Length: 554
Image 1 (cartoon, rainbow, N blue to C red):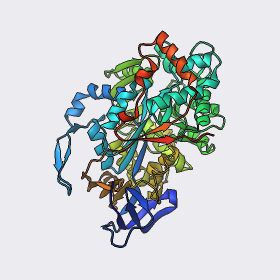
Image 2: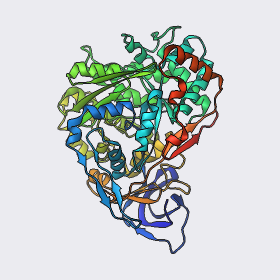
Image 3: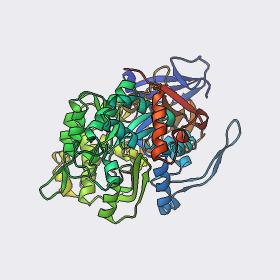
Image 4: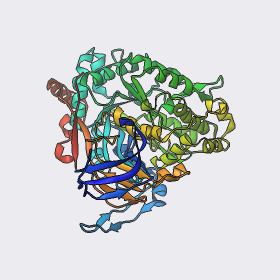
């Protein structure tokens, strides 16, 4: 995608290769990082600036049926934040940047552009049902600059529950492989295992061992079966799990029980802040962040992203539709719900987090506790569960909260004091993240946890996805407007403004599976569904720039 050039004189933060602020050159050729380029190659002077790999967002919501619904549900926010069509001159002629809208759920063009504007070059949509795969791919095809992919929702789908109820857990790996391959998805996402299926039948699931389907299927059996299948298939990313009882006071017990249920298998626990609550005698939530992070610190097979709450506008958007219903009932905000045939559910509620609200302030504090008490930043990834905890555009402010204690203490004085009183922040947590640790939690760690060998580092062979920032005492301002961003060696952002808009790749896994599962699925869908399995199989030519990632058998 680009010719050879050299970034000269920057302070490089590349923790995957043990580089911590060293002044060195970064060489690029053919869209990849290389060890050297010819002496006469063009030079980009970045002396004194901070050079990092492009950011990787491991968990966000940017495509698929629920995102489309959320865009339609928030016209007033989008109308206030419009990007007009622009024409950018270039050596090969002008480029047209199409118009779009922002708000908490930006349009496709705006999403890719604004991620790149922060120095992010890869992002993964975290929850798409198989029936919604085609819409998700169409929207990802229309999202410029960034590489992307999505996680396929399993764990409440009727076919899986029937396999487990019939004692056929041995068929689960073939089923998972078939569904991932047909949808051209990257990983498996489990949301409230069994709980959504039960909610659709008017029931609430309290614990891991409560039956949710015929044959005595429980959330524990679902978690064990899918985690085992993911490991057996050698998928690059572990089971990506949203635990039962999200947002419920006292849910720390369920979260810890789910972690223990993995029994040494890999697991990535997502938006863990929403699952880290204790409970008072009068049912008010309290912080249980220390209990969660101490367990994760002691179990290296586990990783998490935080799902930090940031004050201001948000949109609750979840395949855990029961949570959306509870939020609607608590707040009176309008909402929309969709049941996905034989697969999942979806609920959406426009929302706003307020500093003086006890619960919102507690959620904000719990997220910071998790970051600041984590022993290993390689297993604790920065996220806001965009747009659930806040927009990805709040990442620069979150980075400042982690790096600048004085700023953090100033913010603490503004929020509800009763919420802070029961947290570790009340004890004056002094930790400040370093630039190297920020490079880990925003780049190197998510890339490693996703098994993306060419992302998150600046060693030879890596994609030339590079972000360059001017040092600034105001960390938020520094990370909000990069000096340069390169995507596969192409300059796409300069001084926070777009300069080009290439199309990134859609990443997905390619898996072999026993063909017998196809006939079983066809019979099941013919008996119970309105679509046949092949109706939502995605062909390679439906991806603008697809790239398959081979799994490694374990």
